Length: 124
Image (cartoon, rainbow, N blue to C red):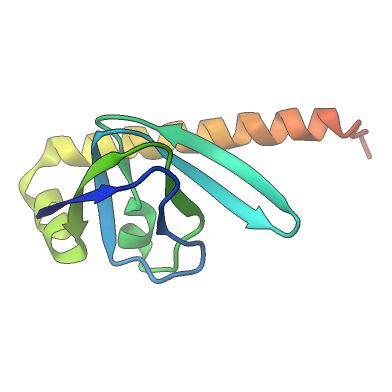
């Protein structure tokens, strides 16, 4: 595994790109966001100790969102191969990833609910 340093505002990866790496934030912060012209939807802002980019490694599909460094950010870069080895070797890591995914899903649902209500949605 290697460490990469991203400058403030630097795009780490883009929505739609193949995902062959995950990232663990050592220092700094990262914004995860989706783009649908002309709008931007912020899915979350992650800080030290957070893992991101793992969805593409888990399902083999393209990136579902953009990731941008909010400030100078140091990340451990984890290859697909090393990620799979880690999962096999460390049961605790699987639990951490599951907790992260559950948190992401809950936050996304809450954000969608708020947008739904803000638009004045009505029952069918």
